[in-house]
Image 1 (tube, rainbow over the protein chains, first blue to last red):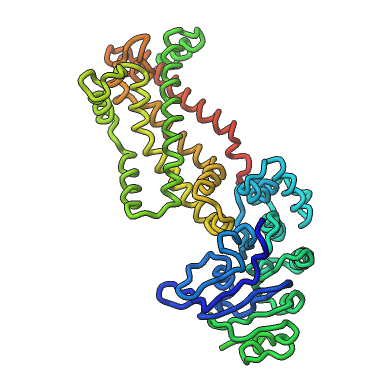
Image 2: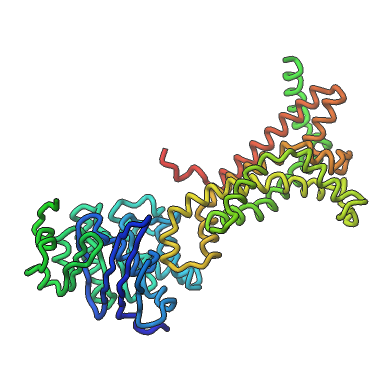
Length: 238
Length: 234
């Protein structure tokens, strides 16, 4: 049994590719409960930050530290990608896959996967191929698959980027439930309205740097930087 | 044209009368080729997957070599296997020369690079799609290979069938290591070569038609069993 893996500390991390710095150096701490929303314009480094925290990016500088040794955190964190990565399997088998990796028997894994599917509204779609789902359903499947291991922290990279209002509302409702159940959420979005609805904390990135953020109410009411103010007002950047 | 027509009629007659010789060599053809395909798939499919997900210094060279080996001349393979298995060869003590086992060995050598190369291509594309997910789920290398082989099974079936197609039509290598011995190592392709040599074109053509029908039947059966086109969009 793994103990609490938070707080998560990013210490002066920098990610670069092809000689160009994509993110950082920046430092950040994720602790406690609730939802941290990562905001910023396109190319500001939102996706790279989430990937770096989750361990999907090689750091050129700095380190990401957890409360327990990193290998022990792997099964306690999950990631939902902007474009859902769908396995060539049925809905129930796709969701059950992480449990099979943990050594659960197929029957038990499928039963828990069915429960997870039910929780995100895919209870009637279990036998369908994952690729046959609608856009919103695909993202729900990705969320169910991420949650089926009951992770302590869930990273989501713009999960509603390509969805309509109804699907976005449904996913926000699912995430609200996940938050109430105690899973820490770190999510990027370019949708300021969604950020206002969901955030307990906000992080604002600009050109790969963390330039603003803090408690959500403070950040949204009185952003400290002109870039964050412009972003929240929907102004266009030069 | 007359020979073709006569050959088709002869093929129908041989099938309808369940000619015992035809049945025997057809079953032997299937035994040798199916065995070779299964063994080559057991080697080639994981090898293709392993090459797709691993980065090492000589990787490109290995892939290039594998692609080059797809064009291995069967006669040369037959010759090499013959030398290895002949009484004075390093494996002569096994007494495998002029047996169906020797024919299977030769076919495995010929088709393993084909299966590995095609499966590598298919798995590489699937790995590109699955990479972030499987890394995020903290999978071990073996778990990745298993997932890729399972989810890519339809493309891999095609790889195995390509190997089967090459093997069932192969004559040069199995003629050398099998010897085309009646009631022992004669298969459809070597029988066709023999009958052609004897000038029995109609019988040779009849055997040829049966060989083609057998290859198509096996392919169709496997596609139907694996429901390859069931979920296609078009």
